[in-house]
Image (tube, rainbow, N blue to C red):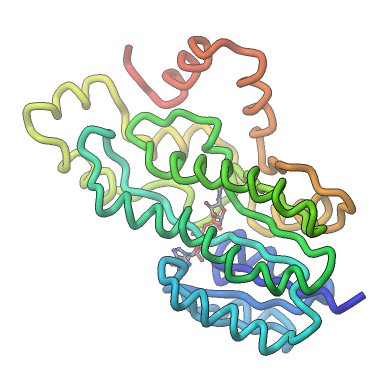
Length: 285
Ligand SMILES: NC(=O)c1ccc[n+]([C@@H]2O[C@H](COP(=O)([O-])OP(=O)(O)OC[C@H]3O[C@@H](n4cnc5c(N)ncnc54)[C@H](OP(=O)(O)O)[C@@H]3O)[C@@H](O)[C@H]2O)c1
């Protein structure tokens, strides 16, 4: 069996950094990418095996170059694990007034980027033999977050794509799974005051009183209602439940108080679920 190797995007911060460090500590050869945040902390804490490269996942050329670099480093051995982790959250606001250029960019990062990454790395994964692809989606796919539609929509598309990829990869002995985290304390959890101001400012004055009467800014509710884990604890679970598993499940839901979300969708009516989300996210009707 060849050396275990992983390519992971968004490895300079949060969940990606914690998983990269865990795999490095377990002897894996880690190729990580970073975007705006320099990966100094990870480089300091990891072994000299670690290779970090700058790669904006919204840039198809940068993805091709990253794949080329990994191919040159691994040669015929191939890559054993691909983790598509990098993502961003969208600016909150009602569907009616969403800035479509911003939403488009969000889809580039959260959906088209992971798709391009899978396409670019598949030849190397196939070379390895029984390689694996872990797509980091989100438990937000089970939620309805009023004024917070863009991120769950992008992740829902990604989860759907992952299901299809999983089936298509079976003949190649490549296992694919979606990792749906929830409640991990990173840069991504919560919104800033500036985002709240921008959210209301983007709504035309004649509609603002109605939106403000019935809806709350989603950030407040997210902070208040959810327990958060440190990324290292999350990475430990990912390693034990997913990386070490021989046969991968289609979906791994990991995080505090999130495992009930898909069950809720199976056993409750749509109406009942909407009622719960209205209460959870401070909707006033
Ligand atoms: N934390 C949670 O509770 C939670 C819940 C559900 C899903 N997730 C998912 O978990 C994954 C990791 O998120 P996180 O919580 O660890 O947040 P995070 O620390 O903000 O990690 C996101 C990473 O993606 C990178 N990134 C953003 N835009 C990029 C781009 N255009 N090109 C390349 N990299 C880019 C960021 O780099 P820069 O900051 O340098 O741009 C950052 O390193 C994401 O897929 C997220 O959707 C997290």
